[in-house]
Each structure stands twice: as C-alpha cells, then as structure tokens.
Image 1 (tube, rainbow, N blue to C red):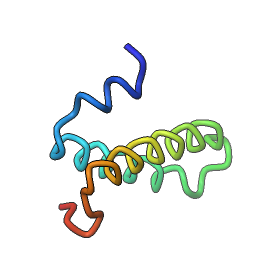
Image 2: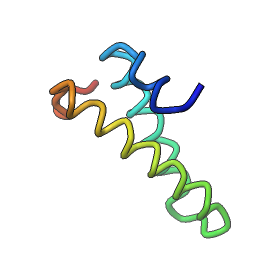
Image 3: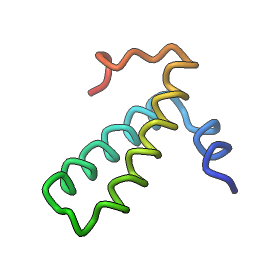
Image 4: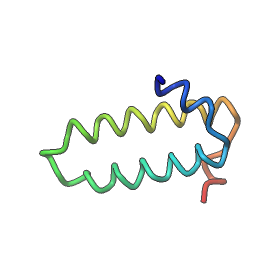
Length: 64
C-alpha cells in the first residue's frame, strides 16, 4: 500500500501520534550528519502527515 493511502486511512489520533513519533525521530538525527538521507526521508514523511492534518483541520497546538 502506498504511504499516502495508508495515511488517509489513519484516524485523527493516529495522525497526531505519527506526527509526534516522526518529530522525535528527526530530532534524534539532528546532530548526526551520517544519517542525513534518513533524516530527509523522515522530514518528507512529516510533511505528508502535516498536509493530511491540515486537510482535516487538525490544529498542531492540539497535539499531545
């Protein structure tokens, strides 16, 4: 299944949790230049989740 279809099937709460998980993973790579490609992929995933959240009008400040 393609990632955008998988994201579209997530509940609002699952999207918020996925956003938080990806954000934590990106911050783990912040000071690790060897993992640059992995970090860039995570950032792309975050942007996809953010777009889904915006389309559902989930506000980022409501995230736990």
